[in-house]
Image 1 (cartoon, rainbow, N blue to C red):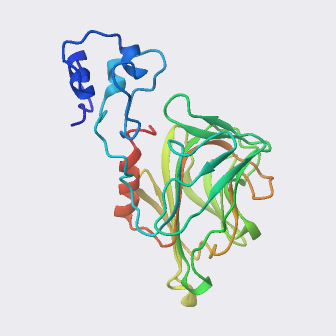
Image 2 (cartoon, rainbow, N blue to C red):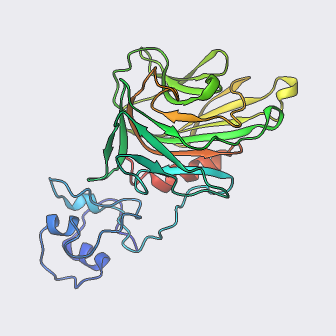
Length: 288
């Protein structure tokens, strides 16, 4: 049973959650570093093991949390999660719903943080990126449905109007951030600027494309921020089948983005708002 999400937390509450006697005496620092019991990093929220060590860092900590991810897994082509399979050379896929998406190889040494929560990869906006070793599969032109979801921390300082958060080969459907307005932009032969800003602080974004109406011009993209539908774009997007891709820049480099990514997911269908919300809720206690 998880600790409460607000209010006063006593040392005895933390001890009970960790499975030791309630009257065990110890400093918060020792507990946060796993000196009383190994911290379960599968919990949606857990202490970050850096000073200052406060009781409030234990809000919602669940020592018995399942190792399974609580987000949407149906039609999940790949989930890259900084809490799993991340090192300074590459970032291996954490889970899929059939098939393997391999790994992302880091180019020019983006900063990798796995020492204190929340974990992430930070791109410098200059020349680093993470490139795919497998192409994405998301249907053909007439049956393409896909979703991209992210946990992003925008560090600002974009140097141009189209810095790639994600880039696909052939500029098939790039996701970028504007330098002046910080609006999220999508490229599919032309730039589509949304009303959704890429703001500072950890935020969950989802871009969901449904091409079921491609023949009559009613295909569209839905843009979500922290589980909330922000905008629907008619004739936005394009199929991304059999394309390689990169995080933080175009696959071959250039138009580099400045920011942190904690999680990136590719789906081969358009997620519903309920499914996008499930992804947000699954991890909002960690990336906040």
